[in-house]
Amino acid sequence: MKIAQRMENLSPSVTMAITALGRELKAQGRDILSFSAGEPDFDTPDVIKNAAIKAIKDGHTKYTAVEGITETKQAIINKLKRDHGLEYSLEHIVISNGAKHSLFNLFQILLDKGDEVIIPAPYWVTYPEQVKFSDGVPVFIETDDSSKFKITATQLKEAITPKTKALVLNMPANPTGAVYSKKELEEIGKVLEGTDILVLSDEMYEKIIYDGGNFTAAAQISQDMFERTITINGLSKAVAMTGWRFGYIATPKIEIVKTMIKLQGQVTSNVNSVTQYAAIPALEGEADENIEAMRKEFEKRRDIAVKAFNSIKGVSCIAPKGAFYLFVNIKEVTNNSIKFCEQLLEEEGVAVVPGLAFGTEGYFRFSFATDLESIEKGIQRIKNFIEKK
Image 1 (cartoon, rainbow, N blue to C red):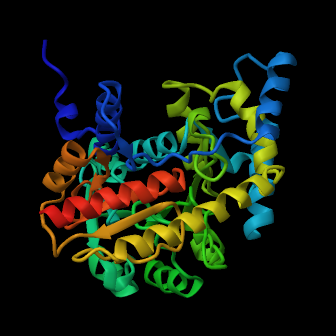
Image 2 (image 1 turned 90 degrees about the horizontal axis):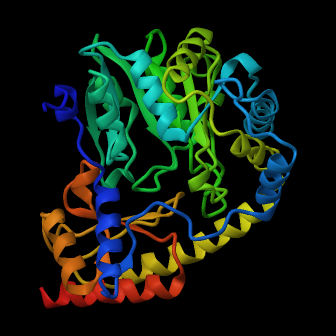
Image 3 (image 1 turned 45 degrees about the horizontal axis):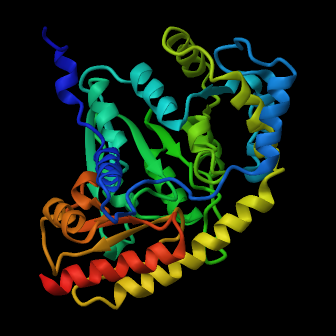
């Protein structure tokens, strides 16, 4: 049997692989501390669980419209209006099985062979893989600590070609926690004026912002940016609903919405009905106290972890402005992040993700979405490992 050629272009997720290996070693009796998965260690808030239980008891267990039920779509509209002053209608929203599914749908319906998608690096591992699977070409703009892992308007202008179809923005970013200011987004928007380039703005971590900062959505920068932006979001990270699989897009471009519904209708149909009902209180702000409590705890962990890493000789780490990852610079220690992470897991029982998986060598990603005791213990093991080397 021969597997389809297109699968040769698709690489497995390194983060998933390392997480799975960590679990396997743990099952063998090894003392493993894993900082590889992007999953909050908090439980889903009770207000969401109770909404799910009510939905089941009320019999909301049937097929729904492919794009989602009206009540949930309206809750998304209310959220975008309340948080960012954005005006959308029901025909502007599509609910999918997590933001990853939303992105896959988008790349599939937007890209023809050879179309280019600009992706800032470091990047979430899934972006380039989905672009390549959709016959597109990922074009990377390199960033590092000195730019706080953010691209500039000048870099964007230089990367644009006649084949550029879209720019992917992820803010706060995975794996760096970078957050673009309103001014920086305005400068990016000016570069795009007069083009047909779409902005795919992945705002999954928007509620996890530190240092009293404010989050600016790409679509709220200007009318021009509103028209070209497809906002991708969900509830996995901020509301600890990873397993529920709820993502959505919002765009004023009706043709994109209709085509996305057509594709999803032939692949997965609707998101499970119970999740859609459970999402409503989260979108309407009924879990905001829970979200803020989680955000505060993440910020506390961030501060402790950043200080601990920066005390290790040969290691440096800038404090992320959002999300729950540190992108730790180990260039003075090694420039082979894969070998470093493999040996760290084998010798010290600590699982982190090599920077190369995110397109940037000389770093590793450390998720602080776990308890403080494990974080402190894990960083001490990393320090021991580096000192031995």
